[in-house]
Image 1 (spheres, rainbow, N blue to C red):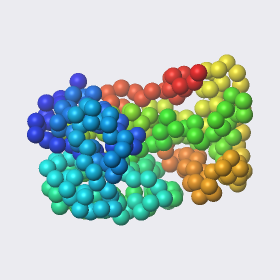
Image 2: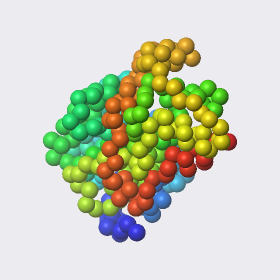
Image 3: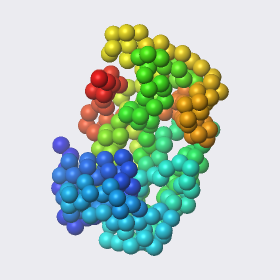
Length: 298
C-alpha cells in the first residue's frame, strides 16, 4: 500500500492535456488513489470535453502551450506538473519549452515529462518525436526544477491500429519479422504517473515503463489465433507495400509514413527494454496481451 499521507494537504498537482486520453486517465488515477479533487487541476486548451472532470470537482484551467501567458496563469499556485507531451506534426519543442519555462517562472517545484522509450545508445530517430523529446529532456534537466522523465512504450490498447481491422479474416501483414516490444496500456501508464505525482522520492529520476510481456507482431498473431481457435496468418511485407496499403485506404501519405516509422522502430528493438520500473510503480505485473485482447474481442 502506497503512503499517500506524504502528500501535503495544500499541495496542488496539475495535469496538462486533460481532454486527451493520457491526461484524463492520469487525473482519474489520481482520484482513484484518494488524492482529493481539490488538490488536482487539469489544463486544457479546449473548453469542450471537460464536463466529466468538472462533475468530479476537478478544477480545469484553460491554457495553450503556444500561449506563454496562459501557462503562467494556469501554473499559479501549482507544486507539481504532469507535462503530457503534445502531438506529432506540431512544434513540440516550442510547446514543451514554453511549458517548462512557465512552470519555473510560476514557482512549480517538480515537473514530470512523458517521452517515448529509446534503446540505449541507439541512433534511431523516430520522426516527429525523438528530436523534440531529446530537446525537451535537455531543457527540463537544465531548468532547475525537480524532474522525473517517464519513457513510454507503445500502448497495448492501440496495437491493433498497426494491422488490419479484421485480422481474423485478413491476417496480420506488417513490415516486421521478429522484433519485440514491451507494451503497456494507457491506464497502466497513467497509474504509474499518478504514483509518481502522489508519492515522494521520484525527484530527478528517469523510469523506463516497458510492460511485463515482450511480444512481436508474429506473437500477436499467435495470441489472437489461440483466443479465436483459428489460425491467424502472419506475413512480413515491405514498408512500401505497407504504406501503399494505408494510402489506398485513405490515409494521408505523411501519416502512413509516420505509422510505418513506429513499426520500423519496433522491429529494431527500440521498445523492448523491460526495466521492471512499471511493475514496481504499479505493485504488480502489467496485463498480458492475451488478457487484453480477450477483454476487447467480441
